[in-house]
Length: 326
Image (cartoon, rainbow, N blue to C red; front, side, top):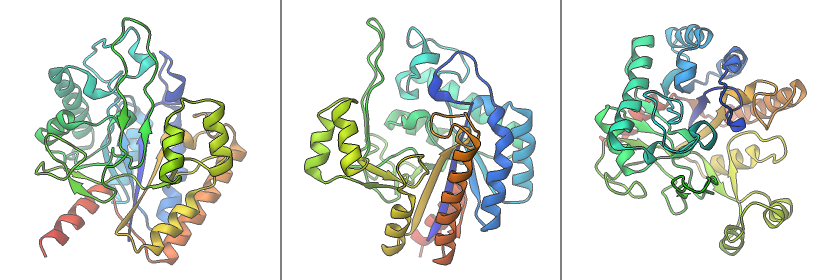
């Protein structure tokens, strides 16, 4: 099994949806990098525009790349990646998906961040994750034109509720990955829910269905509120992630399941801001951060004990394509 560790490397507490952008969480990345290196694992830092301009992060990432202990990839946040373009009445508040913008604007936004990262690190960018998981076929074709090789935006079993927007703004699309493949596949140029001929390998995030079909159907009938909270309290979340959570301790359940299945890979994800106390709604203080590290360390130790090998996203792409040629 290959362990892929993906870090959405972005501004502090993007959930606050404020106009002010800070990147103090970059200072908390070395601790996480040290944990990964202790097990011989290699994170892939998927980097947004604001973090690509943070001097501390750039110096840190250059050290990681020099020692071959990680990878840098791309993670565009459409709402604050240049060039500026207003899609809603307040893009910094409503965080539109990249694929909502005009095609020419998408191309420019992807190219600006790609060029910035490649110029900064003197390396080709191969790996990508869409901001807020917002990928569609037209966006994928643009990534292929920019010579990306791997995407990891698909969250199987997961339907993302649309963000409410005021009257007059374009309605937020529903992002629904239910029914998508759970194993790696090359994307189709017209329909990313099926395999095709685009030279972009989709490596879905590791999620397990937490509810059966009937309960999932009931859950989807309701918007966020008492009913959904009650279902989560009684039956757990509708999907289980390989990522830490302050309340739902699901990581070891996911890890042991994937090991028992002799899976080809398992993908961990986290936001860089979740490594900083108060940098996210999830981990608000040092005590919670320390508990999170203990939980992650336990999962990584279990994987190491069961022979999991660390790989960056692009290394996994190379491994996967080499297996296809045999």
